[in-house]
Image (tube, rainbow, N blue to C red):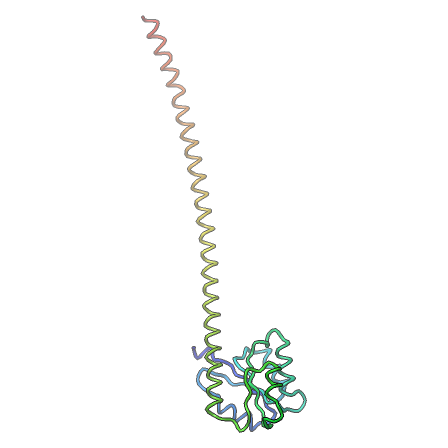
Length: 199
């Protein structure tokens, strides 16, 4: 992974202190962290960037995390972004089940376990890097295939031109041989007739 091509992470929370804390927790080398304080702001960012992971707060005014996830899953550009939900609500509210139904790959409860969050983010960053490396390799293979097709077309064209040249040479040689034989045949016949007359 090069510094010019970092993995982009999106965190969405309506509380600035939560955004700062999560940003500090997941920021690292080879990563860019984008922050959004609302679902609408998050959607706007997703139209501009390709994210390796979106960490969404469940409870936000206006569009909540579940609604944002459903919109993401319904849009071609954003449907494959992995979603991790974060909630301060207790486990008894069964938010995790609703989160998984909305397309989440994981669900975390506050207070966050720093090591667990870093570990999960590392996994998604690694997957993103591998996916993009595979895309680059596929693109290189496609370019190579196209170059080979071009070379094959050029080779076939050269071969056809060579065969055409060989046919023209053979026709020319046949014509030359015929033209050379014609006067010689006349001379040969004339010589044979004279020989017969002399006898």
